[in-house]
Length: 66
Image 1 (cartoon, rainbow, N blue to C red):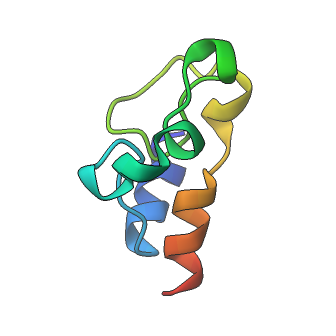
Image 2 (spheres, rainbow, N blue to C red):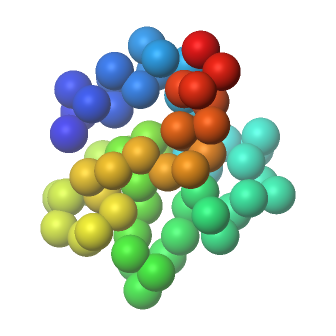
């Protein structure tokens, strides 16, 4: 998962919990009950929750502008 996180940075994606996404917190930085953090969260996870292995809409938006 670290590899794909770093690929996201290479494609213009920032961390999902950065200040720039504060207005999209529910979409970019969900709780564990909402599926957990996405690949571009600032710290690593065990990868056991559904969102842990995919890019958020915020990351995909940033990548699409690359």
